Amino acid sequence: MRQIFGTLRSRGLQLAAVAALSLVPCTSTLASDFPKQAVEMTVLFGGSSATIAQVLADGLSKQLNVPVAAVSRTGGGGAAGYSFVKATPPNGYNIVWNSNSVNTGFHGGNMPFDYRSFDPVAQVGMEVPALAVRSDSGWKTLADVAAAGKKKKLKVGISGRGAFTHLASAALFEKMGIEVIFVPYGTGSAPVELLGGRVDAALQWPSQFTAMADKLHIVAVTSHSRVPLVPHVPTAKEQGFDVNVVMWRGIAVPAGTPKDVVARLQSAVQAVVASAEFKSQSAKLGFEPGYLPAAEFGQVIANDDVVISKLMGELGLAKK
Image (tube, rainbow, N blue to C red):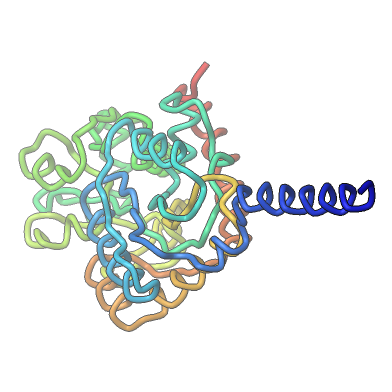
């Protein structure tokens, strides 16, 4: 009887152990099945950022064989969208179309968490800001703008205080040796503000100025290399002002997302960025595809955080 009881008791413990194990989520199995449902990609801004995000989402849908919806969650310089994604389960079904805004948002005090709240998936590419003036201003080069700026303070349009265009402008005008008055004009309003004479110059993405090439003149781009959309426009460095300020964009997920899920997303992004369709659409929008895998992308974000922290501190824009 004691032997039978011992056997039954042993069998019971085994069944209990199996039952207990069945209640524990098997992360590796779940991850290897990814994705089994639609994925949401949070888009933080409108304009060309939202347009290229939709192109990326369409490509990812084909690569992942599930719908990838680009959902606009704007506000707070990206803080609204980052906060939403950070609060979601780290399972790969909520991704964010991130950018330098994760660093400006934190150092500007718009959100209480930094880039380490997210795991990098892949860099998708870059956008390069361009400085434009009215064609009737007579300013053809940065030297012309600098000369005018030494006679009077110029009003320069930026998309918002502490925004990336503000930082890029500040870096450029510091190199040019002039002080300017920054005027926030709101996303996508640069051409209107310039044509209306409310600002003397504006810094924004080249695609916003090219449609009005007869009335607006792009003076320079802020990267070390020329931009394919406007190949005739010289860089600031070519004109004697050594700046290299670009907006990187990529995909990130909440910290703690399984590594094989990140790898699956990374592979899908790589395939989309390499596709002829994505390259064609990017060229039309002035977006430069530039794929980097998760590890390298993470280093880009970390390095950028150091630069932005320093620059925002110097401009008095960093949180106290």
